[in-house]
Length: 259
Image 1 (cartoon, rainbow, N blue to C red):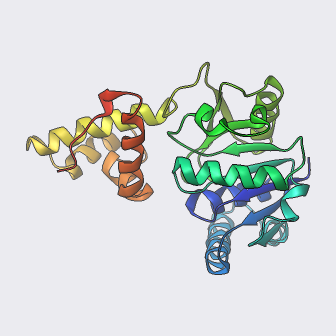
Image 2: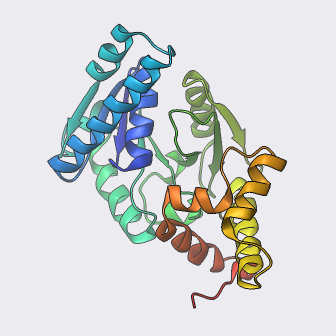
């Protein structure tokens, strides 16, 4: 495998594109607008420069990584060369399924479709596709160019070959794959984090502690790199809210009040 497609230029998209390119693969980075692509490339350059200043990589590695990334606003021919296409678009079932229907027409028969969804069941995303066996979940953590863990989860139709391919691929990125034994909405880590976040919100609403105090306890007492409220700000409160809404469809323990 020499070429990887990445669809989406947001935080996860450009972070995954950088990670894959740093691992020696050619990357085709797709964005709907040229402006979003340019913004993504600027962030990749900035991240690589930070790595260089910290002595993680050398200057020539920065240039080689950037040279491996090709950008496009078209899904016509470019993605056909990819062995795997990693989707990192908005956490919306309709948007993702519409995208897969389009992508499936543009890629080769054996190209894997990987989704970075953090909450949507893979089986739901597989529905209506001509070849649902090649669709799988690869949940990278933010920021993906730094975080080592990747949760891997198949759906109802995911083939063993697809699972094996993704596990091997993730390892080549220097990541640690965690294979889920069965399909779980929200995977494992997000279910734990969101449960903790809802509990923390209750504590704040009851006036028992402030967000800063809760984050301080988790960071300095339990050694977490980021507090729950810091993490929510980092990924976006809108993303957290949407994730909770999706999980509520499958598990009412994630019910919450928006007031």
